[in-house]
Image (tube, rainbow, N blue to C red; front, side, top):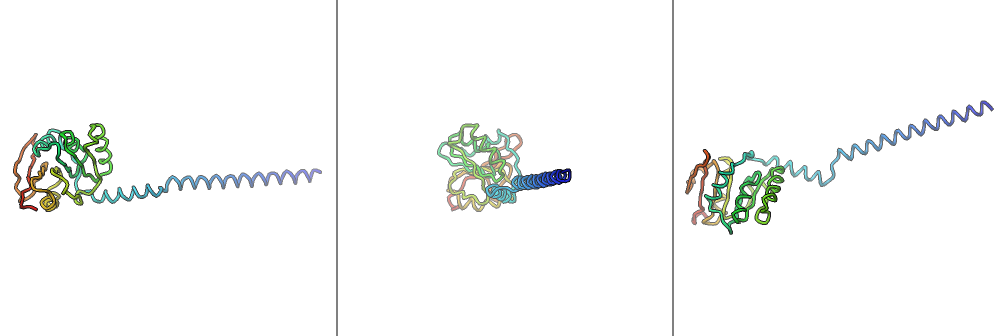
Length: 210
């Protein structure tokens, strides 16, 4: 009788050990799957990460905010008014886009940095000009400029020169181009203004450029 009871107890202990071992394996397996689920992004997230990486590699100008008094002068110098279509190349936090939209123009900012795109879109909403303004995430060297009557930019000298052939060939005669800080090489500006120690250049597209 004692031997029989001992056998039953041993069997029960073995069974419990097996159950504990099995439960441990299941727990470890679920934990591993959970870790995989956390680490491995879903297809949409992978696509977004890949797109961000592509845009990151195409950044050619660091973001340096233009003081608002300079923005105001740039928009004024270009004579921005209702009916104009303003393209801001490298639009940063959207301040030029917002300022142009407040003057009644249709304003489009082109920016490649995803964080700045989000920030500038938020700023457009805060300013209440979302009907007149938008931000597109795009490499500025690939933008078709033919729809603009005004182009604004605060880039770098070599980037200005890269854009110059497109500006001259795609913009309609009479369109205005305004650049903060940097000129266009041998293309002489129509006007030069200085505000707060900053230089602003204005060009008007001549009839013979097209």
